[in-house]
Length: 298
Image (tube, rainbow, N blue to C red):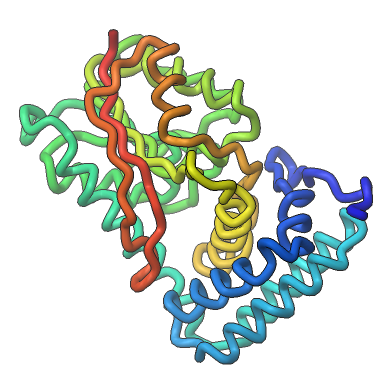
């Protein structure tokens, strides 16, 4: 029986849905798929041989399945990161390339979706959750707009100006300050569904025309949430810290289906002008589903 001592672990202001990560690793219905997905992610994102990637994935699942306390979860996580780094001396470089590949694809997809009337207009755009501003820079260069960023943990060096913000979702900009705003694969990293909706209200307030959203969904047709959660956990709590030195990405597991997102947007006075779920190649040879939304103000 799953012991109650494993809870959602707070990392400063960040939260990991560790209870369900452990549950997925314990479950006969999901553990084999977690192993397969993890090994595939490593081998498709790096030059690590498939056999060694599989050995690591099996070790990860076995250790988390036996986890019984918060401190043990933290210790396992730290040890697994160190093990990953030892698999290949070039793994950090390869993972940086992989994440930049993913960001480049997201920027290209968004550039195609953004209304062409903004091309070379010089209007202001906001990249919320910008990180190093890589996606925002690609969009700025591709469309000829001026992009600014917002992030709760911006790195020291960024591709566009990125303002550090508090994690409560409140933004300092005036109403309709930006013509367009983008938020890329970030909403499911926000701790609660209520906080997600508060952020959507803020983005609507500071945006005069359209909001563009890329999000990782769960399926409406199957219970794939445990697999989506463990994949998201591994990417953000294992791979991203090695690639970019950012160990505090929250993984609270606040996923929704595409239809649920549409209902939320409409409830917050946003019209869904475009909605599409793609099986995009997110990490070189690995396909990851994403839903794309173009939203207008009602």
